Image (cartoon, rainbow, N blue to C red; front, side, top):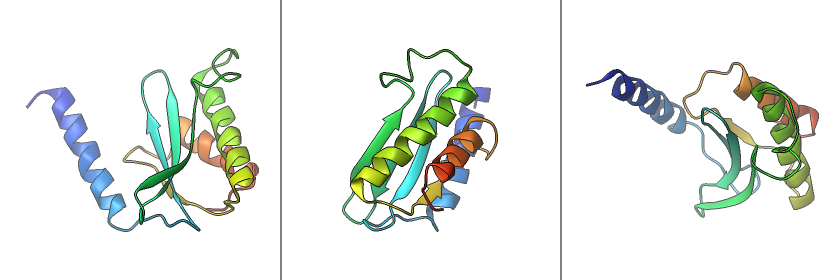
Length: 120
């Protein structure tokens, strides 16, 4: 097992441990974060029906063109997902850090979403 596989295996185990307790409904969807090396993506998911209600990423217009480091990009994505959620009538969510540490980009995205009006 290579180093990459060990890291992926570790994150998958953490992710499954989190998902045992974190579930989203249509009233309170699960806010799932995916972080790649360059981008950050977030989805609001209704696990009962298995549908994505809202999505936002750092690849959208307005965020992609702006300058700044990845933490600032994550902050903008957090604000964007909060705006979209308000427009769709979603006020509270369940946060799913998806196996990542609550640190850096994941933390800045969550704090920006809280400032934008989402409750979790």
